[in-house]
Image (cartoon, rainbow, N blue to C red; front, side, top):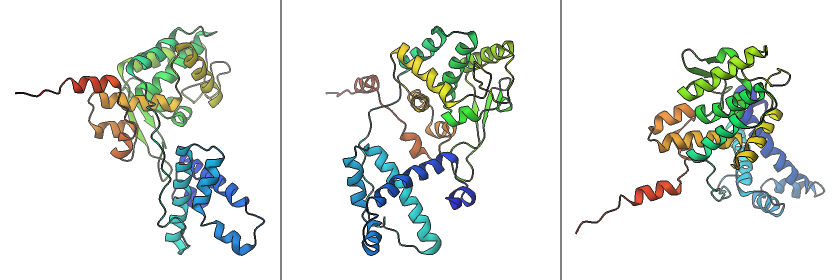
Length: 292
């Protein structure tokens, strides 16, 4: 893990991906801890047994797929560095069925923002921070961790830019600039004005509406839970980012630009966020015409 963190300088999100995969693999190996040393050594190569063990425990296919890829990455690196045997050579990654579309339609996104604005929050500041955070995820595609790390100096409302420092990626994370859409600018200006009126001072751009502390995972979970229930639209922070990417593609924004706005390393990653709605299918099928 030290090599991943200090040599390859993976982001904390990638390090967490490694850690979770290894924790699960370690649990599997420990189920055979009482075997003789020679037999226990063979357990390292029993990857199909690892998959079966997780399947019996009810682990989701997509989670198993993630665990497999994270542990495989480690063994590939070890083999390259010191020639250690790689048990993943010649093994196929467990298939994961494509999950149901997660991105929300434009109507659902509008309902989320409308609910955040009109929910009976106890204070004005709670309303403003809830709307601002959700709007930033929807209009700018920020990841949850990027929301937490955002500072006042990262947000320039005059130039319409948000600077993301050390986002997801290798070598400590990738920096990028995000342009602020006009509607998001109005929401953020309103939030900043409310924060100033409440005299909440903090280097963090988003602050807890109660104590003025840096925004936390607990505060975000509470906002998402309340707005999701009140709007009738189930969503998570990542679903909002997913919706941001999908809606850009649906409106005809070139993939290369969508990739840069989302901070993806490749267009293939961007395409993985695409959701096709029934209305898209209906619109396109109406173009089908055969001439006699």
